[in-house]
Length: 428
Ligand code: LMR
Ligand code: MN
Image (cartoon, rainbow, N blue to C red; front, side, top):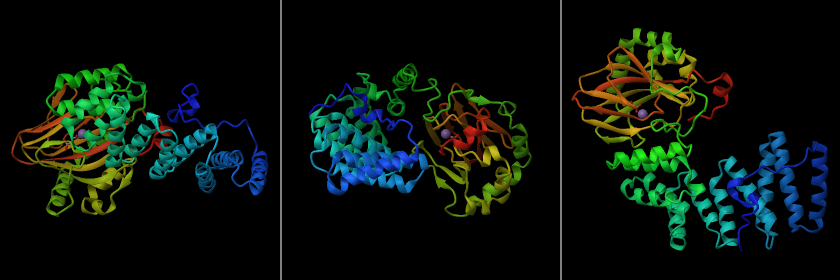
């Protein structure tokens, strides 16, 4: 059976909320009653069950009720389990069930609905891709890989399956092999492959394989397609109106007073950072796969707006200074941490996830050797001094010396965010 391409509502990528005309609660309740009446004599009536699911869904939204949402999901699932449901009802219920299950973070349950779609529409490649992408959303890399490989067996030229298979390889650490698949998948410029993550990882894979010029071309293409804010600023979670510059003066941040206060206290902070290093296990290896070579560890104090209370007991003054400053303490899209780097370390060029924060570094132990490049501008740390950069811009670190380097990293909200934005942005 063919997919109804003419009707965008049948496409899972165009998930739309159901659009009831304005309907006061009473009308919903009476509709529900009527549907249930039908179901009491014909429990398998697809239209009535669909009606129940939709009304519960709408009520759940209006009343912000998790209980009703779960009942709506259960009704959709019951419906999708029936034999011979009319196609339009099947498709719109599947779409909405997936949307609601994802909203609740239940991606593995959503996978069951994707599988029902695949069972019913065996020859629609998009439903297979949607299942693979669903697995990717929750980092189930081997499940995703299996789906894309099976799909490519039947549709070797499908750009969505091809590029996402490349993405799975890249995320699994198979950087060099990922390149050919990502390139092949992105070449036809299919609308469903105009996705910042695909361009981000292809550029990264090329750059890590020494193909700097090719990486630049990919970044440029990403900018032209509106996926990146600029060739150097390739963060994925952005607010449009924020001023973008790689390096900030303390004054430009509007937080100069706070940074000056950190500078005045740098020796206490340094001593706390150093004494925490004597305790085993507090500093942990950088876990984002950003290291090319060397040794780079971090000791977390705050992240996503949360305080690491146990860690802070080891460095109380530092945590108090940061904790008293709300643009740092409340920065749900950032972290505060000590960062120690051994000589001989290289950190790959990379971009932070969001343009909503600025990153301050306070130099604590700075031997000769370490340097940091942000966009086109390379600088050095100075003991007792703060510098601030926007880590959504590409940056890269080399420590060509031999002694360890210690800095305190404090992320602060971008000063251009409104209080409402800060209150509602999801944590990163
Ligand atoms: C980074 O934020 O990527 C690095 O600058 C961190 C560090 O320790 O230098
Ligand atoms: Mn970084």
